Amino acid sequence: MQEVSRFGKLQGFVGWENFGEVFGDPLFYESLWRTGIWTGAVVIGTLLISMPVAMILNDDFYGRGLARVLVMLPWSISLTMTAVVWRWALNGRSGLLNATLMQMGIISEPIEWLAEASTAFTVEILVGILVSIPFTTTILLGGLSAMPQDAYEAAVVDGASGWHQFRFITLPLMKPFINIAIVLNVIYVFNSLPIIWVMTEGGPANGTDILVTYLYKLAFRFGQLGKASAISLIMFGVLLVFTLLYVVLLSRNEADATPEEEVKSDDE
Image 1: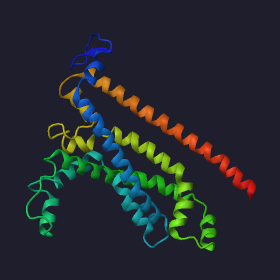
Image 2 (image 1 turned 90 degrees about the vertical axis):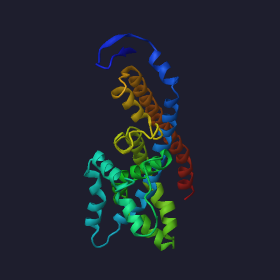
Image 3 (image 1 turned 120 degrees about the horizontal axis):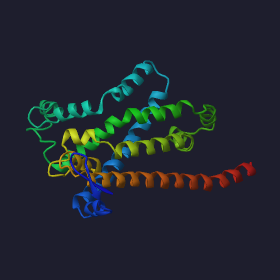
Image 4 (image 1 turned 45 degrees about the horizontal axis):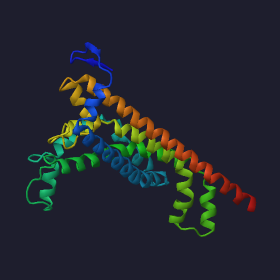
């Protein structure tokens, strides 16, 4: 790799020195671990909420069109602007959240939501889930709309409960759409900068840094472009390995399930 000055000038070939500096930095491992928590929590939380929301929006009820618009509307708003609004709402002195909780008698004094790393990171995960719901709901709603209704009609005739219909009909048929949502959300959330950067800039004391904010600081605050480029390659490698492993596991599961389905069909 090349060593690059803060002004973008190449200063010579340095081989693997940039990677050596990255792997020798404790902040890199902390950011990597925090990135895994951030990505996993946001993706799992988003799926758990988006599935029931999509199922509700898929039902036929009065005002369904308006409800779909309201759920999808936040998707059109800039993620940076959303983070700015939440930073203001979570302000310890003049934030809307503290004012509302105090008026309701839930808290007696303001809480500094973004002053401690543990609290700030938890809040950022919740915001990340909230802004990811519209996109994920759209994917799942498309899958639910394309599902055959005759399977549900047959299940109702056989006396299947709502839970059994969801477990044995909805989930198996929704697997392709759930898999798409997982892969796209992992890539999107893993590389997501605005929420954490706007709300805390990776602070306090680097306590909410993930890889992308750590990279941003190195490149544009400290001028360590070579080290930042090494981290970008590491991030690309992590996402590539995850995607390949996920595809391989899905292929194996489908291959293992196929013989069983063929046996069942032969028995019938």
